[in-house]
Image (cartoon, rainbow, N blue to C red; front, side, top):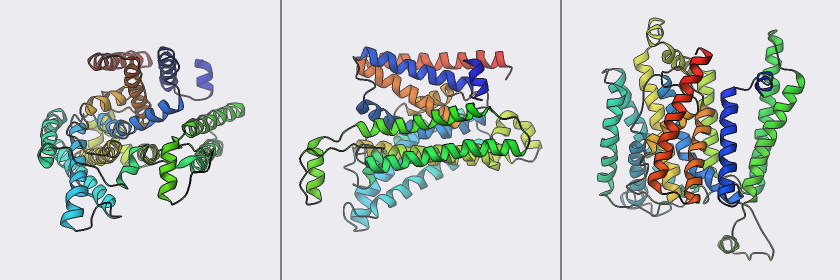
Length: 418
Protein backbone atom coordinates (compact mmCIF):
# COMPACT_ATOMS: atom_id res chain seq x y z
CA UNK A 1 0.00 0.00 0.00
CA UNK A 2 2.87 2.36 0.77
CA UNK A 3 4.47 1.70 -2.63
CA UNK A 4 1.11 2.16 -4.35
CA UNK A 5 0.55 5.45 -2.50
CA UNK A 6 4.05 6.61 -3.50
CA UNK A 7 3.37 5.71 -7.15
CA UNK A 8 0.06 7.60 -7.10
CA UNK A 9 1.75 10.46 -5.19
CA UNK A 10 -0.90 10.27 -2.46
CA UNK A 11 -0.04 11.59 0.99
CA UNK A 12 0.27 8.57 3.29
CA UNK A 13 -1.14 10.63 6.15
CA UNK A 14 -4.23 11.41 4.07
CA UNK A 15 -4.52 7.74 3.12
CA UNK A 16 -4.37 6.79 6.79
CA UNK A 17 -7.07 9.32 7.68
CA UNK A 18 -9.35 8.02 4.93
CA UNK A 19 -8.74 4.46 6.13
CA UNK A 20 -9.56 5.44 9.72
CA UNK A 21 -12.73 7.22 8.56
CA UNK A 22 -13.89 4.19 6.56
CA UNK A 23 -13.18 1.87 9.49
CA UNK A 24 -15.09 4.20 11.84
CA UNK A 25 -18.11 4.24 9.53
CA UNK A 26 -18.12 0.44 9.16
CA UNK A 27 -17.93 -0.07 12.95
CA UNK A 28 -20.86 2.27 13.61
CA UNK A 29 -22.81 0.76 10.71
CA UNK A 30 -22.47 -2.63 12.38
CA UNK A 31 -23.29 -1.31 15.88
CA UNK A 32 -26.42 0.51 14.64
CA UNK A 33 -27.77 -2.50 12.73
CA UNK A 34 -27.16 -0.91 9.34
CA UNK A 35 -28.57 2.56 10.10
CA UNK A 36 -25.35 4.57 9.96
CA UNK A 37 -24.47 4.31 6.26
CA UNK A 38 -27.95 5.06 4.96
CA UNK A 39 -28.66 7.96 2.58
CA UNK A 40 -30.64 9.74 5.28
CA UNK A 41 -27.89 9.58 7.89
CA UNK A 42 -25.14 10.47 5.40
CA UNK A 43 -27.20 13.49 4.31
CA UNK A 44 -27.62 14.59 7.94
CA UNK A 45 -23.94 13.92 8.63
CA UNK A 46 -22.85 16.21 5.80
CA UNK A 47 -25.00 19.16 6.87
CA UNK A 48 -23.90 18.71 10.50
CA UNK A 49 -20.25 18.85 9.43
CA UNK A 50 -20.50 22.07 7.43
CA UNK A 51 -20.35 24.65 10.24
CA UNK A 52 -17.29 23.14 11.96
CA UNK A 53 -15.68 22.34 8.60
CA UNK A 54 -15.88 25.96 7.43
CA UNK A 55 -14.25 27.27 10.60
CA UNK A 56 -11.65 24.49 10.55
CA UNK A 57 -10.31 25.77 7.22
CA UNK A 58 -9.57 29.12 8.87
CA UNK A 59 -8.15 27.48 11.98
CA UNK A 60 -5.52 25.86 9.73
CA UNK A 61 -4.12 29.29 8.88
CA UNK A 62 -4.28 30.41 12.52
CA UNK A 63 -2.39 27.35 13.81
CA UNK A 64 0.05 27.37 10.88
CA UNK A 65 1.12 30.89 11.94
CA UNK A 66 1.73 29.52 15.47
CA UNK A 67 -1.38 31.04 17.03
CA UNK A 68 -4.62 29.62 18.40
CA UNK A 69 -8.21 30.88 18.44
CA UNK A 70 -10.36 29.81 21.38
CA UNK A 71 -13.12 32.33 20.61
CA UNK A 72 -14.57 30.90 17.38
CA UNK A 73 -17.66 29.41 19.05
CA UNK A 74 -18.44 32.64 20.90
CA UNK A 75 -17.73 34.74 17.80
CA UNK A 76 -20.15 32.53 15.88
CA UNK A 77 -22.78 33.21 18.56
CA UNK A 78 -22.28 36.98 18.34
CA UNK A 79 -22.52 36.96 14.53
CA UNK A 80 -25.63 34.78 14.78
CA UNK A 81 -27.22 37.14 17.31
CA UNK A 82 -26.50 40.16 15.11
CA UNK A 83 -28.03 38.46 12.08
CA UNK A 84 -31.06 37.26 14.04
CA UNK A 85 -31.76 40.76 15.38
CA UNK A 86 -31.35 42.18 11.89
CA UNK A 87 -33.97 39.75 10.54
CA UNK A 88 -36.52 40.09 13.34
CA UNK A 89 -36.10 43.71 14.42
CA UNK A 90 -34.05 45.93 12.12
CA UNK A 91 -35.44 45.13 8.67
CA UNK A 92 -39.11 44.46 9.57
CA UNK A 93 -39.59 47.21 12.18
CA UNK A 94 -36.87 49.84 11.90
CA UNK A 95 -36.71 49.79 8.09
CA UNK A 96 -40.37 48.82 7.59
CA UNK A 97 -39.61 46.04 5.10
CA UNK A 98 -41.84 43.46 6.78
CA UNK A 99 -41.13 39.79 7.31
CA UNK A 100 -39.46 37.61 4.63
CA UNK A 101 -38.59 40.58 2.45
CA UNK A 102 -36.12 39.74 -0.40
CA UNK A 103 -33.55 42.14 1.11
CA UNK A 104 -33.74 40.68 4.63
CA UNK A 105 -31.43 37.70 4.15
CA UNK A 106 -28.72 39.64 2.22
CA UNK A 107 -28.81 42.45 4.78
CA UNK A 108 -28.47 40.00 7.66
CA UNK A 109 -25.56 38.20 6.02
CA UNK A 110 -23.75 41.50 5.36
CA UNK A 111 -24.23 42.46 9.02
CA UNK A 112 -22.89 39.08 10.13
CA UNK A 113 -19.85 39.32 7.87
CA UNK A 114 -19.17 42.86 9.03
CA UNK A 115 -19.33 41.73 12.65
CA UNK A 116 -16.89 38.89 11.98
CA UNK A 117 -14.47 41.18 10.14
CA UNK A 118 -14.45 43.83 12.89
CA UNK A 119 -13.98 41.36 15.74
CA UNK A 120 -11.40 39.34 13.81
CA UNK A 121 -9.43 42.49 12.98
CA UNK A 122 -9.57 43.56 16.63
CA UNK A 123 -8.19 40.20 17.77
CA UNK A 124 -5.46 40.35 15.13
CA UNK A 125 -4.49 43.89 16.16
CA UNK A 126 -4.21 42.91 19.83
CA UNK A 127 -2.06 39.91 18.93
CA UNK A 128 0.01 41.31 16.09
CA UNK A 129 0.61 44.92 17.10
CA UNK A 130 0.28 44.87 20.89
CA UNK A 131 2.04 41.55 21.31
CA UNK A 132 -0.59 39.92 23.54
CA UNK A 133 -0.46 36.11 23.17
CA UNK A 134 -3.24 34.72 21.00
CA UNK A 135 -4.19 32.25 23.73
CA UNK A 136 -4.99 35.10 26.14
CA UNK A 137 -6.73 37.31 23.60
CA UNK A 138 -9.00 34.57 22.29
CA UNK A 139 -9.62 33.12 25.75
CA UNK A 140 -10.88 36.55 26.73
CA UNK A 141 -12.87 36.64 23.49
CA UNK A 142 -14.47 33.31 24.39
CA UNK A 143 -15.93 34.90 27.52
CA UNK A 144 -16.63 38.36 26.11
CA UNK A 145 -18.39 37.52 22.84
CA UNK A 146 -20.51 34.71 24.29
CA UNK A 147 -21.98 37.19 26.76
CA UNK A 148 -22.22 39.99 24.21
CA UNK A 149 -24.45 37.65 22.20
CA UNK A 150 -26.53 37.06 25.34
CA UNK A 151 -27.01 40.79 25.94
CA UNK A 152 -27.87 41.46 22.30
CA UNK A 153 -30.85 39.10 22.57
CA UNK A 154 -31.59 39.60 26.29
CA UNK A 155 -30.99 35.89 26.71
CA UNK A 156 -33.95 35.00 24.51
CA UNK A 157 -34.25 32.60 21.62
CA UNK A 158 -34.79 34.64 18.44
CA UNK A 159 -36.83 33.22 15.58
CA UNK A 160 -38.15 32.04 13.28
CA UNK A 161 -35.58 33.40 10.87
CA UNK A 162 -36.18 34.66 7.34
CA UNK A 163 -37.32 31.99 4.88
CA UNK A 164 -34.61 32.78 2.32
CA UNK A 165 -31.99 32.79 5.08
CA UNK A 166 -33.04 29.26 6.07
CA UNK A 167 -32.03 27.95 2.63
CA UNK A 168 -28.47 27.72 3.98
CA UNK A 169 -29.51 25.34 6.75
CA UNK A 170 -29.36 22.07 4.85
CA UNK A 171 -32.60 20.17 4.47
CA UNK A 172 -34.52 23.40 3.85
CA UNK A 173 -32.37 24.28 0.84
CA UNK A 174 -31.05 21.73 -1.65
CA UNK A 175 -30.25 21.66 -5.36
CA UNK A 176 -32.56 18.76 -6.18
CA UNK A 177 -31.61 15.65 -8.13
CA UNK A 178 -31.05 17.15 -11.57
CA UNK A 179 -28.91 20.10 -10.57
CA UNK A 180 -26.98 17.90 -8.13
CA UNK A 181 -26.00 15.60 -11.01
CA UNK A 182 -25.05 18.63 -13.10
CA UNK A 183 -22.87 19.94 -10.29
CA UNK A 184 -21.32 16.52 -9.75
CA UNK A 185 -20.44 16.14 -13.42
CA UNK A 186 -18.91 19.64 -13.48
CA UNK A 187 -16.80 18.80 -10.41
CA UNK A 188 -15.69 15.49 -11.91
CA UNK A 189 -14.74 17.19 -15.17
CA UNK A 190 -12.85 19.90 -13.26
CA UNK A 191 -10.96 17.26 -11.26
CA UNK A 192 -9.98 15.34 -14.41
CA UNK A 193 -8.87 18.56 -16.09
CA UNK A 194 -6.75 19.48 -13.04
CA UNK A 195 -5.04 16.06 -13.13
CA UNK A 196 -4.39 16.36 -16.86
CA UNK A 197 -3.15 19.96 -16.56
CA UNK A 198 -0.81 19.02 -13.72
CA UNK A 199 0.70 16.20 -15.79
CA UNK A 200 1.07 18.50 -18.79
CA UNK A 201 2.86 21.16 -16.73
CA UNK A 202 5.29 18.60 -15.29
CA UNK A 203 6.11 17.27 -18.75
CA UNK A 204 6.66 20.77 -20.13
CA UNK A 205 9.21 21.46 -17.36
CA UNK A 206 10.88 18.04 -17.64
CA UNK A 207 9.69 16.97 -14.19
CA UNK A 208 9.07 13.27 -13.45
CA UNK A 209 5.44 12.20 -13.84
CA UNK A 210 3.38 9.29 -12.60
CA UNK A 211 2.77 6.34 -14.93
CA UNK A 212 -0.20 6.87 -17.22
CA UNK A 213 -2.11 4.02 -15.58
CA UNK A 214 -1.68 5.74 -12.22
CA UNK A 215 -3.12 8.98 -13.60
CA UNK A 216 -6.10 7.10 -15.05
CA UNK A 217 -6.65 5.18 -11.81
CA UNK A 218 -6.53 8.38 -9.76
CA UNK A 219 -8.95 10.12 -12.12
CA UNK A 220 -11.35 7.18 -12.01
CA UNK A 221 -11.17 7.07 -8.22
CA UNK A 222 -11.91 10.79 -7.85
CA UNK A 223 -14.77 10.64 -10.38
CA UNK A 224 -16.32 7.63 -8.64
CA UNK A 225 -16.09 9.36 -5.25
CA UNK A 226 -17.76 12.55 -6.51
CA UNK A 227 -20.57 10.87 -8.44
CA UNK A 228 -21.07 8.26 -5.72
CA UNK A 229 -21.52 11.02 -3.15
CA UNK A 230 -24.11 12.74 -5.35
CA UNK A 231 -25.93 9.42 -5.91
CA UNK A 232 -26.17 8.83 -2.16
CA UNK A 233 -27.58 12.31 -1.50
CA UNK A 234 -30.10 11.91 -4.32
CA UNK A 235 -31.17 8.57 -2.85
CA UNK A 236 -32.55 10.34 0.24
CA UNK A 237 -36.19 10.75 -0.76
CA UNK A 238 -38.37 13.73 0.17
CA UNK A 239 -41.32 12.54 2.33
CA UNK A 240 -44.64 12.38 0.51
CA UNK A 241 -46.34 14.90 2.82
CA UNK A 242 -43.59 17.44 2.17
CA UNK A 243 -43.90 16.88 -1.57
CA UNK A 244 -47.64 17.51 -1.32
CA UNK A 245 -47.03 20.83 0.46
CA UNK A 246 -44.45 21.80 -2.16
CA UNK A 247 -46.89 21.12 -4.99
CA UNK A 248 -49.73 22.87 -3.15
CA UNK A 249 -47.55 25.98 -2.74
CA UNK A 250 -47.28 26.08 -6.54
CA UNK A 251 -51.01 25.49 -6.98
CA UNK A 252 -50.48 21.98 -8.34
CA UNK A 253 -51.42 18.45 -7.34
CA UNK A 254 -48.81 15.81 -6.55
CA UNK A 255 -48.89 13.17 -9.33
CA UNK A 256 -49.53 9.65 -8.09
CA UNK A 257 -46.32 7.69 -7.57
CA UNK A 258 -44.10 10.76 -7.95
CA UNK A 259 -40.87 10.72 -5.92
CA UNK A 260 -37.90 13.07 -5.65
CA UNK A 261 -34.60 13.17 -3.79
CA UNK A 262 -33.20 16.08 -1.81
CA UNK A 263 -29.88 16.20 -3.62
CA UNK A 264 -26.90 18.34 -2.62
CA UNK A 265 -27.59 20.77 0.26
CA UNK A 266 -26.75 24.41 -0.41
CA UNK A 267 -24.79 24.46 2.86
CA UNK A 268 -22.49 21.70 1.55
CA UNK A 269 -22.10 23.66 -1.67
CA UNK A 270 -21.03 26.61 0.49
CA UNK A 271 -18.45 24.42 2.28
CA UNK A 272 -17.06 23.28 -1.07
CA UNK A 273 -16.76 26.89 -2.23
CA UNK A 274 -14.96 27.87 0.99
CA UNK A 275 -12.63 24.87 0.72
CA UNK A 276 -11.70 25.68 -2.88
CA UNK A 277 -11.14 29.35 -2.05
CA UNK A 278 -8.98 28.60 0.99
CA UNK A 279 -6.99 25.99 -0.96
CA UNK A 280 -6.29 28.53 -3.71
CA UNK A 281 -5.21 31.07 -1.10
CA UNK A 282 -2.92 28.51 0.55
CA UNK A 283 -1.31 27.17 -2.62
CA UNK A 284 -1.60 29.84 -5.30
CA UNK A 285 -1.31 33.26 -3.67
CA UNK A 286 1.39 35.39 -2.09
CA UNK A 287 -0.68 35.60 1.10
CA UNK A 288 -0.66 31.81 1.40
CA UNK A 289 3.09 31.60 0.89
CA UNK A 290 3.62 34.30 3.52
CA UNK A 291 1.39 32.44 5.99
CA UNK A 292 3.30 29.16 5.69
CA UNK A 293 6.67 30.92 5.60
CA UNK A 294 5.85 32.80 8.79
CA UNK A 295 4.66 29.64 10.49
CA UNK A 296 7.82 27.79 9.46
CA UNK A 297 10.19 30.47 10.81
CA UNK A 298 8.69 33.78 12.03
CA UNK A 299 12.06 35.47 12.56
CA UNK A 300 13.33 34.58 9.08
CA UNK A 301 10.02 35.66 7.55
CA UNK A 302 10.22 39.07 9.21
CA UNK A 303 13.85 39.52 8.18
CA UNK A 304 12.91 38.68 4.59
CA UNK A 305 10.48 41.60 4.50
CA UNK A 306 7.14 40.00 5.43
CA UNK A 307 4.99 42.26 7.62
CA UNK A 308 4.14 39.56 10.15
CA UNK A 309 2.03 41.94 12.27
CA UNK A 310 -0.26 42.83 9.38
CA UNK A 311 -0.28 39.18 8.33
CA UNK A 312 -1.61 38.23 11.78
CA UNK A 313 -4.43 40.75 11.38
CA UNK A 314 -5.31 39.31 7.95
CA UNK A 315 -5.37 35.74 9.27
CA UNK A 316 -7.74 36.64 12.11
CA UNK A 317 -9.94 38.66 9.75
CA UNK A 318 -10.28 35.53 7.61
CA UNK A 319 -11.14 33.58 10.74
CA UNK A 320 -13.81 36.15 11.62
CA UNK A 321 -15.33 35.95 8.13
CA UNK A 322 -15.47 32.16 8.31
CA UNK A 323 -17.09 32.32 11.76
CA UNK A 324 -19.78 34.57 10.29
CA UNK A 325 -20.38 32.16 7.39
CA UNK A 326 -20.60 29.29 9.88
CA UNK A 327 -23.09 31.33 11.90
CA UNK A 328 -25.29 31.58 8.78
CA UNK A 329 -25.24 27.81 8.39
CA UNK A 330 -25.67 26.96 12.08
CA UNK A 331 -28.53 29.36 12.81
CA UNK A 332 -30.39 28.64 9.58
CA UNK A 333 -30.15 24.89 10.25
CA UNK A 334 -31.84 25.48 13.62
CA UNK A 335 -34.24 28.03 12.02
CA UNK A 336 -33.63 30.29 15.03
CA UNK A 337 -30.85 31.81 17.14
CA UNK A 338 -30.29 30.21 20.54
CA UNK A 339 -27.99 31.22 23.38
CA UNK A 340 -26.07 27.94 23.29
CA UNK A 341 -25.30 28.07 19.57
CA UNK A 342 -21.63 27.38 18.89
CA UNK A 343 -20.96 26.05 22.41
CA UNK A 344 -17.73 23.97 22.45
CA UNK A 345 -17.26 24.62 18.72
CA UNK A 346 -13.79 26.01 19.45
CA UNK A 347 -12.71 22.59 20.69
CA UNK A 348 -14.27 20.79 17.73
CA UNK A 349 -12.66 23.17 15.25
CA UNK A 350 -9.19 22.88 16.80
CA UNK A 351 -9.57 19.10 17.00
CA UNK A 352 -10.62 18.93 13.34
CA UNK A 353 -7.57 20.93 12.24
CA UNK A 354 -5.17 18.88 14.36
CA UNK A 355 -6.67 15.53 13.38
CA UNK A 356 -6.42 16.73 9.79
CA UNK A 357 -2.65 17.05 10.09
CA UNK A 358 -2.12 20.70 11.07
CA UNK A 359 0.99 20.88 13.25
CA UNK A 360 0.62 22.82 16.49
CA UNK A 361 4.27 23.84 16.08
CA UNK A 362 3.22 25.80 12.97
CA UNK A 363 4.20 25.77 9.31
CA UNK A 364 2.31 22.63 8.26
CA UNK A 365 -1.38 22.09 7.47
CA UNK A 366 -3.87 21.40 4.68
CA UNK A 367 -7.41 22.58 4.02
CA UNK A 368 -8.69 19.20 2.83
CA UNK A 369 -7.17 17.56 5.92
CA UNK A 370 -9.09 19.92 8.23
CA UNK A 371 -12.39 19.19 6.48
CA UNK A 372 -11.74 15.45 6.66
CA UNK A 373 -10.90 15.91 10.34
CA UNK A 374 -14.22 17.71 10.87
CA UNK A 375 -16.03 14.86 9.11
CA UNK A 376 -14.29 12.28 11.32
CA UNK A 377 -15.19 14.26 14.46
CA UNK A 378 -18.83 14.59 13.43
CA UNK A 379 -19.04 10.92 12.42
CA UNK A 380 -17.66 9.94 15.80
CA UNK A 381 -20.19 12.04 17.69
CA UNK A 382 -23.11 11.10 15.46
CA UNK A 383 -22.27 7.40 15.65
CA UNK A 384 -22.00 7.46 19.44
CA UNK A 385 -25.33 9.29 19.68
CA UNK A 386 -27.00 6.66 17.48
CA UNK A 387 -25.54 3.86 19.59
CA UNK A 388 -26.89 5.55 22.71
CA UNK A 389 -23.70 6.80 24.34
CA UNK A 390 -24.31 9.53 26.93
CA UNK A 391 -23.18 13.07 26.07
CA UNK A 392 -20.55 13.27 28.86
CA UNK A 393 -18.89 10.08 27.65
CA UNK A 394 -19.01 11.40 24.06
CA UNK A 395 -16.92 14.39 25.18
CA UNK A 396 -14.52 12.03 26.97
CA UNK A 397 -14.02 10.08 23.75
CA UNK A 398 -13.57 13.23 21.65
CA UNK A 399 -10.97 14.59 24.09
CA UNK A 400 -9.12 11.28 24.06
CA UNK A 401 -9.13 11.17 20.26
CA UNK A 402 -7.67 14.69 20.15
CA UNK A 403 -4.79 13.75 22.46
CA UNK A 404 -4.10 10.52 20.54
CA UNK A 405 -4.14 12.46 17.24
CA UNK A 406 -1.49 14.87 18.54
CA UNK A 407 0.58 11.93 19.81
CA UNK A 408 0.40 10.19 16.43
CA UNK A 409 1.32 13.46 14.70
CA UNK A 410 4.35 13.88 16.99
CA UNK A 411 5.54 10.32 16.36
CA UNK A 412 5.01 10.69 12.60
CA UNK A 413 7.03 13.91 12.43
CA UNK A 414 9.89 12.42 14.44
CA UNK A 415 10.09 9.46 12.09
CA UNK A 416 9.90 11.56 8.92
CA UNK A 417 12.23 14.23 10.27
CA UNK A 418 9.74 17.10 9.78
